[in-house]
Length: 258
Image 1 (cartoon, one colour):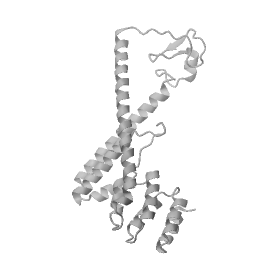
Image 2: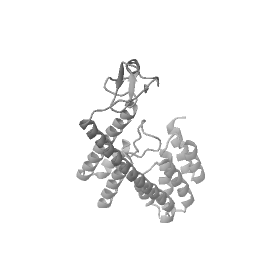
Image 3: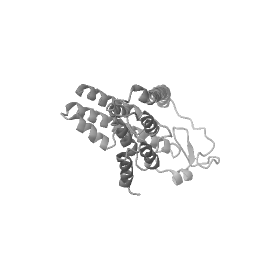
């Protein structure tokens, strides 16, 4: 079914004020078009009658699928005179708890990376000051006993020359370490791109006479969506802190203009 048909179905239920069917349409077609949940929230927020039950259900799905930043949720519900804090209390608590857990996880990773960095620096100093002794007895590729000619790397991996030539993509890289090294490099490049984007957004937001247009443009380009790398492990939160910074700048700018 065409995407526009999903919109038409839900708009029909909105016009006929069939609230339950609006939510049902989101459940049925929301996976194909996530913006249906956002539209449903805006629809119920404009209703002056009590729609707390429907708003809570819509918020639950928005929270589960991370479809909207909390700031937009609060701003959307600000138009509803019946939507008290109790309506979004659970939503905000869940968000804050996840953010707190994320901060703790990031702090643990920072400590881990600092320890690993210190260890690597000591290894580098040791390599500069003394000779490296290669004592591997088996090839890391075929697991057979090493025989000359062989190839050794400072990462302590060793290979038969014919194994290395068969599997290595570069004469200067260890084939065992190459996949992990590429993940790290991809991660660093992604962080640099996100950091540059954050700085550029911040400059534009501060200098623009129409901050709303700047924000709308960035939302339209998906800047506020979470960045996920195909090389990231499941549940990775690498770019989350930068995403939080973007939302914080947006909140600050909104308060200044209100």
